[in-house]
Image (cartoon, helix red, strand yellow):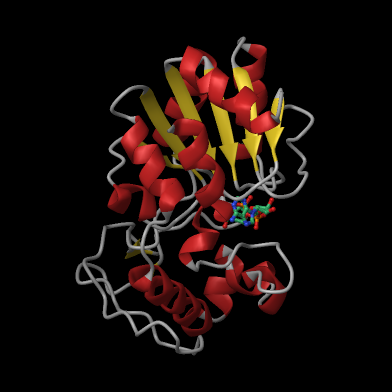
Length: 246
Ligand code: OAD
């Protein structure tokens, strides 16, 4: 039986689904993935220069400008058919989305149960006192990243940082605890558009599998998680999800 039919049958027979998503989920909305040549964000800008607390402390304007550019890209993007299919599937199944993405495309597609393991692009906070900060002016998409001085915190004067998890930082504890519990309790996990190399998020499919769930990978390419999956559907999120969940 073709893998897409195997995945479809699993969806039909299971009710409690966790969907682990990565950058590939939003690729067809025009948001570049991290590691895929030649457009990957990390190919042009090395993570150690942009996505660590040390990089921020060394050059906050460089890092803030880069995140502003990404905010502009996301603002201009719209959810793709994969995001929409997941939102619609919540009418017939329990769907919990666990995403590594910092965009808001799952929510804008209508998904209500979304855990963000790596924070959110629009959840700015003070680097010094951690108080949340309101909206900031976001440049139009299409501009290239440039240096921008970050705003200052109205309470302590500290610099405002993006609300994302940087390398070397801990994941939001509550979100990760819920993600582990959901993974251990689901009867099907869909792993969509992630290379599966960043832990601890990449460990969740094994948690699901060890607890007895079926694991289905949806990705055009083989990944670190392909060996964990019972079924691997080789295709894109926007093409495969509507068919598998439809
Ligand atoms: P990656 O860029 O590492 O992997 C993207 C995956 O998506 C690859 O396996 C691609 O084959 C796949 N892909 C590409 N286009 C696709 C499509 N249209 N449909 C389905 N899959 C597609 O991104 P992540 O795995 O999300 O963390 O990266 C994990 C984390 O690494 C990110 O959250 C970020 C990064 O460093 C932090 O910033 C903390």
